Length: 127
Image (cartoon, rainbow, N blue to C red; front, side, top):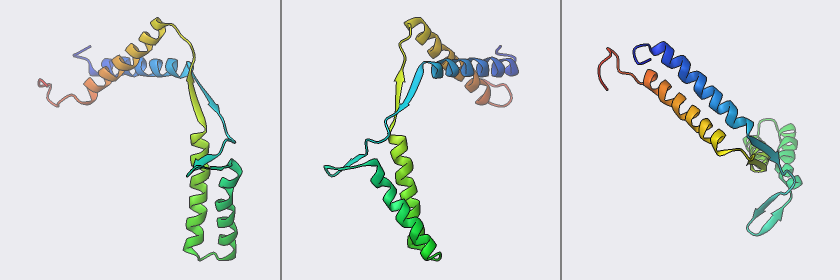
């Protein structure tokens, strides 16, 4: 395998993809939207995060050339996206130690084989 970089590349890619696929199979994703944010000790509900976006949309339709209206609309959209991302929770399902070690070996070994091919010095010289 050391003399055949294409074989190392293919085997490394297969190992990496297999390990990542298996890892993604044991991770469960859920959402807790609706909790809101706590800012300065004040609870802000999830519905209130829509207010800047709605105000920005109204302002943009009222004055299409206003830069401030576009900034408020963009910040409102960013607040909504941040709220959605903050509400996502990841849980690892129970699995055996054997499966977990196998996943780590596949991911690490695949990355190592890919790195050997990608970062090999030209001319076949020693690293």
